[in-house]
Image (tube, rainbow, N blue to C red; front, top):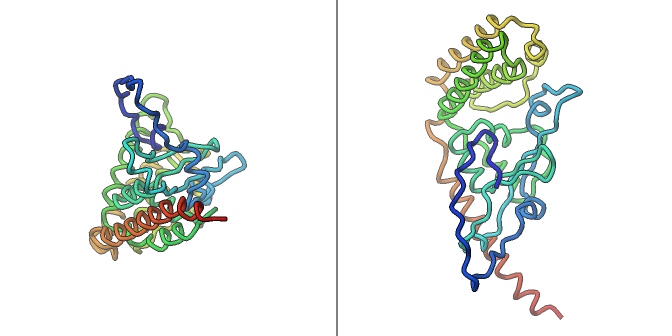
Length: 266
């Protein structure tokens, strides 16, 4: 199973040979879950941020709903799947919601992308829940992620004399997004009129010291916005859990009823 973007790969598990009489697991291939059970799909990255250029990739992200009976087996369905397209990555619905409740920046930006490619009935309900995932916890997660990225940029400057300018641009965008989320209670993905100043950073046209000052100013403004933020202290766990339980129950009833219906079909 591929690792989630930015997540460390788990250590390999010991290899246990199955007994000769043990049947193989009958789980569907991971890519079939993406193909047949995607409830929400969107474009993220530079194209969603309003920062795309002629050479930008198209980053596809999605959410699939693994049929409930798959969870009754010892071999559980995957929490995330890479592919089938080169820049495509999908999460199982429960994993996606768990990360969104923790204010994971990549997940929240996926949920708030202006470039929605697909949303079925479950996907539309997920989109209607966007506000339930937002809370002041976003300050902690966004700031922690931003600090890690800034340290990497500073290490690049020490080693190479310059940062990776594309990464510097995206860090500035993230810091501004965090500040505005805390100020307004709304996550806006598109950078709007900041497109040209940010692209100038990507092209290396802004001195690193000026970029550092810009980063520090945005981080301070986000910190100041936290106290008076209209966001609740915590996300609405109960509302999200109710959604997951209803979706899982409906999937179980649908999957279990399918064989009986087909058996009575003339």
